[in-house]
Amino acid sequence: MPPHALQIACSHCNLRELCMPVDVTAQDMERLDTLVTTRRRVRRGAPLYSRGDRFTGLYAIRSGFFKTRVTTEDGREQVTGFQMAGEIMGLDGIVADEHTCDALALEDAEVCEMPYQRIESLSHEVPALQTHVHKIMSREIVREHGVMLLLGSMRAEERLASFLLNLLQRLHARGFSEAELVLRMTREEIGSYLGLTLETVSRTFSRFADEGLIEVKHRQVRIVNGAGLRAIVNTTVGR
Image 1 (cartoon, rainbow, N blue to C red):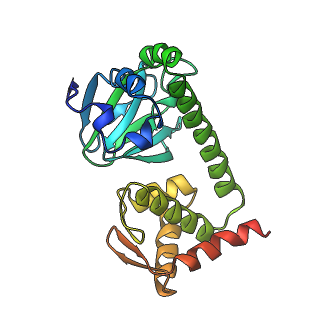
Image 2: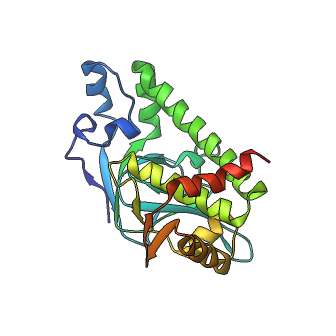
Image 3: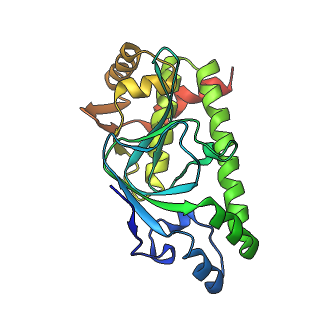
């Protein structure tokens, strides 16, 4: 679906503190309100952008879930991340002026487009914006380091426990439950991201349920024993 005119300014958006700098003056906020000019709806299964597309800007997710992926030469899919409301997408395109991965909607979603030239221009007028963009980039680097640790040294149960706790933490920051979540991604996609087979992911979910750590009903997961999950993850730190 093509982009349409923005109807709600960033200053009135309930996700502003997640994807925009905070503690800015009213005058600076007026400038930031001009950053987003269009809002775009993306249907479930459709791409927000694809590998090789020209990079034009960043995207702030207003609603919905996305996954990013790269596809190997022999057609295998590698999921590289899952993104949700309040997070910024498109940073992969800055380096070479084209996107290096696919971003696909896992459910009907809506994003705010921020032209990168406008971001650079406004950064000179609002230093807090430049600082915020740097923080977003730094957060992405930290996330990639975390994924490397996940794939390089953790056992299957540690990977899945870490994934669930991270997802829960991010959702809670957006006002959702501290103990319940709905998985927008399939177990196969979780396995691709964690470097595990579908069978291993399913077996580990079952083990967590048998041990009373979680309750699973289709894609709904309730964390029964968060301390137990954290204990599984913390065993990595001590090794």
